[in-house]
Length: 227
Image: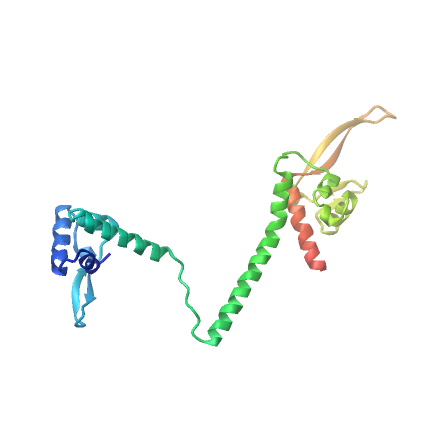
């Protein structure tokens, strides 16, 4: 707040306010020079003034009457509110109005795209929030009934997207980069050959909660490409 504002609010002569500010800041061991400024008076002449931050302002007005302190505090709150309020410049011409309308539409479209991108993630969080386990592909497909796909179709889609593949024996596996990112995990299950009694281990690919989110995003991207 400027010393000119203080003078107006307290009905004091400005030179008296300048003196109050200088004396108070000197007593507090604060240099007044860094708050010095100028203003243009009613005769269009440049005059000295001070511009005070809140702490220094509080020091100066602490010696004023309660009435004047209340007036200054109220004005300070008004200035803070004005500073915080968003400012809108109304278009002055038809061209500016059309440009503003176009920019607003661009922003709305961008917001729609962001919401569409976030939707699969939010949906997955909602459906998997209470689960920290692993899912088979049938369970993953059941998370998205609106897609109308089953577990086998989901595997087929992910193979087409080069996320999964089948080995020589027809087993479904995930490409290593997607395993390293934590989207899939190989679960080992020991079993015994009935014919020989030999112990074997099978590996089944399961989907993590992060993988469900990833698959949801991929399905959305695929729908956009084929739309």
